[in-house]
Every structure is written in C-alpha cells, then in structure tokens.
Image (tube, rainbow over all chains, first blue to last red):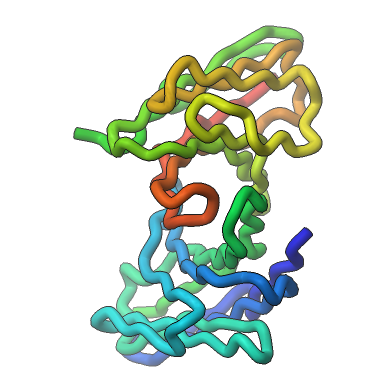
Length: 112
Length: 113
C-alpha cells in the first residue's frame, strides 16, 4: 500500500508568517494530490488540490506545489491568520479502485 | 441542503450493545466511504462502496457491517461494541470514483462505556 508521511507533525507560527507542510508518498502512480483542513471538532474539508500535470496551484493565501520526481507535495499558507489553526491532511491518490491513504496530519497553530 | 449528513452526531453506549450510524449524500456521487478517526486524529479507511457495491473492505472486525441500499445512502452497523471502538466515524463521498476530492459528513462521535 501507499506510504504517506507528513512533516512536521506540529507547527506553530506567528500570525502573518508563512507555513509550509510537506507530504511524501511512495506510489509513483499517484496523480491526484489534495489537502484537507480539519478544524477542532469539525469534519475534514478539501481546501486545495492539484493534478500531476500541474506543478503549482494557488488559491488566495494557499498554494500547493508538486515535485513528482521526488514524490512529495507541499501546502503553503501565507499571511497566516488564527482561523488557519487546524489539522491538515494530505491524501495522494493513484486512481482506479486503490484505497486512499491519508497522511498522519499536521497540527498548525497560529499565534495571534 | 447539507451535502453529506450523518446521524447521530453523538452516540454513547455500553459495551456489548449493537448500534447503527446512518449516512446520506445529496451530491449525486457514486462512491461513499466510512473512515475511522482515532484519538490521535489518524484517518483510516474502513469501507468503500461504489454504486451500492462494496469495493474496499479494510481489515476491520466483522462486528462492523456496512450496508448501502442505494448510491445515496451508506449505513454502518456495529455489533457487540467494545471500548476500543470509541472514535469519531466519518462518512464521505466522492465524484470521480476513488480519490476524487472527498466531501465528509459531520462525523459521529461514538463513546463506548
């Protein structure tokens, strides 16, 4: 099965700083790379995703970058705000009927 | 107009009891899932159904039995509940088969006492 690792497991940043979370995967056939945000006591929600034919995607303060050769992709959050505090999960996927393995999660704390 | 709805939101029950969790999605998605999230926040897939057909059945005790009466509904029945079953159970659905962006339900926090 797919091995998925996220780093760091916890991250504290000052409000206004940037945060970067990295997801490393093992399946070279992975072609879909989403990031989910889970606020305390709530459901995970898809916040951004990228396909393997694209190297970077941006949506306001968040961006995802992909390095298929090195088999990792990263979530970038700029100008962090307290409401960005949450647990973030990656879930790379290779298509077909393979199961999706979620990363172990990164707890981001934005300090006001 | 909730996209994926789960009931109940909270479930507290005694060991040995049998309980069910229900899930419904109104997104027209073909694939639905059950995930278990433990106290360390790990999200682990349990089952996946595509158009009422079971396509993923992880190593889950057979006390857990999913049922999908139609592609919009996926229920989870748990027999003989154990303390270790305490967790948050999330239902989810996706549009592009397995792995397209998931839409999660609000979760069911199961506490076995």
